Length: 71
Image (cartoon, rainbow, N blue to C red; front, top):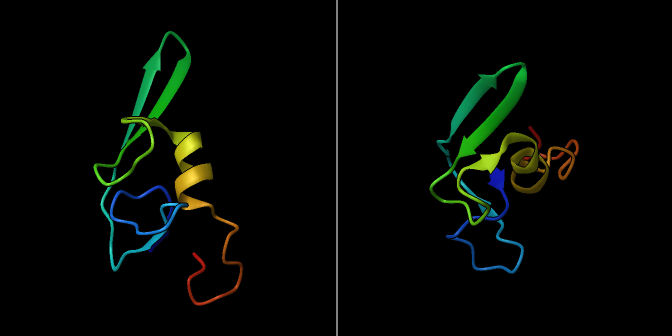
């Protein structure tokens, strides 16, 4: 699993290629407002992190395209 902004990384961009990774996604509703959060103990992003920020920064879904590391 390729992820960025990981504390275990040895690179400036925080890249790590994990064999597996566990996160918690929390979805909260409040008077019509939606607040989706990601709880990732290994991330250097805010804790918890807004879901859309986590997708954009840590997962980077378009980073590998059709490579063997693509999702």
